[in-house]
Image (cartoon, rainbow, N blue to C red; front, side, top):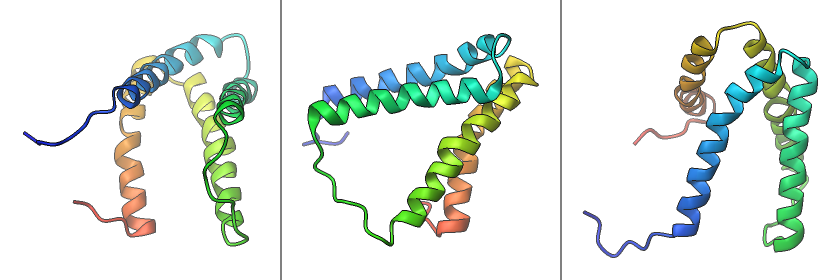
Length: 126
């Protein structure tokens, strides 16, 4: 048991809420893909995310550091792959597979992300 650790209940609640919403988003997307295309659905999901985060930033303000010139290529890459290619490929994959297969593949996402971080960015595995 760890002593002296203070648990931030607000942070725990936010993390659990995010996990629930992420878990619900894939089955909901699978249902919605019968009516709309993968490009439109990916765009709508990330538009909603962008609007929500914009509201959070507007009401809370920003304490973060500004992006430097060196950061922009990384930011553009993150937006291109994580904000455009990733969601579109996810929706495209969901439209062509069963819900059970999609669930199993999404569970492997964490493993592949960790392996990619280890291989590309030389992250340490503790």
